[in-house]
Length: 131
Image (cartoon, rainbow, N blue to C red; front, side, top):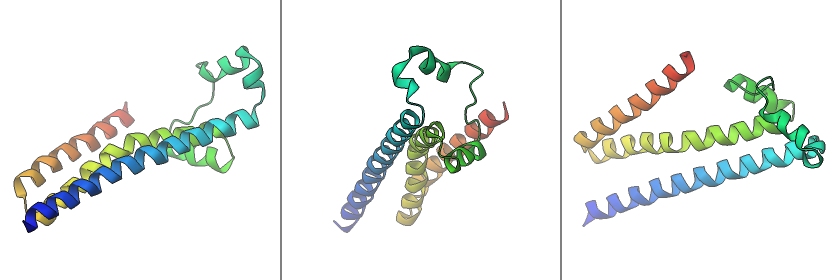
């Protein structure tokens, strides 16, 4: 019975982690959108101004450094980018938390499998950054 309670607690923790990550990322994206429209009111008045956001020449955050600099400058686009990065990071953090949970439970098989999944996720991000 004690093992079943521990498993249930871990499942609840992972569920709450996912929910919190999605909510925080959503709030961050909405905050970035509000900041963008507050700083550039012409976005809401002109389709052409809004289309500039999607133009290939538009300066966008392309790295974490760009995001942090943009946030420091009060740019809503950078805050929105941070929200999207948080949304991407949420399931990765869940996988990492699962590895820790399996190690604590001494469930070596699942710890190894989940560790491999985490490694593949990290490698995919590194490969994506290089290209």
